[in-house]
Length: 296
Image 1 (cartoon, rainbow, N blue to C red):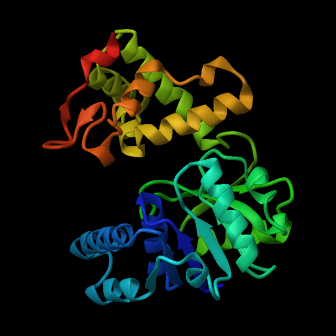
Image 2 (image 1 turned 30 degrees about the vertical axis):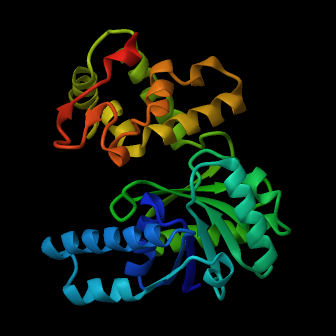
């Protein structure tokens, strides 16, 4: 189980590739975009440089980690000889189903197919494959190289053997795996996203400003980051997508996305990734800049 393919070179994908590569796995990083792969490797290299500067790793270990990663734009070529494949594409059900159908066509019956989805049903994803017992959720937290938690989500047919193996692999990565069952949002986002959504509702209703809400949660509840800042960090589009999945799954109005969140995403203000969300990241990550037109 030393050959691992990671599908998607974005924030989560390159973080997952970094983590496996640093633990001496051979990683095949796959993305349809050559530019995305280049940016992903540059991100990994910068993050490794920070670790070298903090004396957490040596320069040789950095080069060894980068040497463990090979990039591919062709899915079929990229997954060859991989015992474990971790899908970390965009949080879109149609895209994920398409990828898993492709994987089912080209992988052996023993290949373990994991998804980093943060909310979509593992059972639904597994249903498009011939071996649903080998499909499992492996939900890493962002930033992957730093955060310890991995939610391990069993689909309806996921085998005990595969679950145990993925738990063991997560521990080998220096992570703390927690096994949960397959319900919308799992545990992390079922609890986190309503809090983020309610924080945005609080802003939308004019109860307090962005920094005031975040300060209350940081100082009053000992959160390391306020929920609105965290939403920017996660990506407002990702938050919206997760809430929509949970709303559709539970049919409960408490999961309905706040209109302010919807409008922010429509306007392309997605948080850190776009340079602006509820905070302005173009010049300073500390500067508050909320578009007042969305509050009307």
